[in-house]
Length: 273
Image 1 (cartoon, one colour):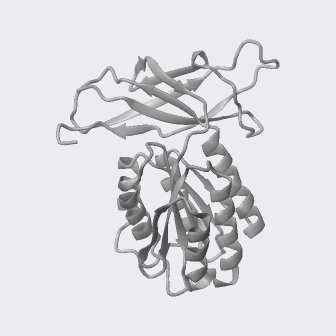
Image 2 (image 1 turned 30 degrees about the vertical axis):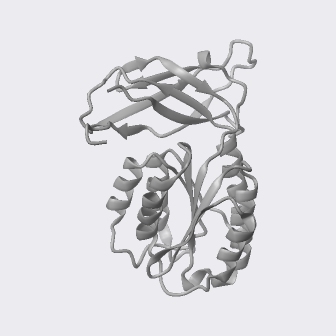
């Protein structure tokens, strides 16, 4: 009844540059207040199950072709063995293509969609998280691209955040937000990303959006994987907080301040899992 728990960690320095070549000794991992023994440590490029969640509302039309190209660039920068599905959303979400490793199929799927209607972000995210249950790999991530605030979902922001907490999927949001989107749209994308162990980006234009997407692809390929068997063996479904401390090697001069980005907790399994 003991379950291996994995935490995927990105480490950056003060200038937000990725830091590689750390060892297990550079990490300390805590669940609650108890330090855990790291029994699995990997720093390698492993395949990822990916979800593209793409805004298809009417307002995206002037930038659609270039955003599609940016999304494909994100996929191309990944591991050759990655699998990817696409969810489009306008008034409602739709699974446009199931998991595939074919870039031409993804390209054709993106190109065939015509912008329409409003913006159901939360419904689309929940659909994508449900689809991720069919994933082949344990390392999973969603890239959510939108240009506005949700105005059409049946689900609420709270429900989307709870779904993100329950799914072990890192969510990266790219918000090309107009003034009309405002702080509300930005705050919702930040909350969704942070609770999942992902990150929220707010580019000023499509070119910057592409840069951010390629950064996400690079980050996914340069993550540390820390695995441990929790000392708390209760299968009670309760929330468990996680903290990862990163200590620079003594030989690094000057000594940098390292930052770690990761999922900060998970729900314990239950006997029905």
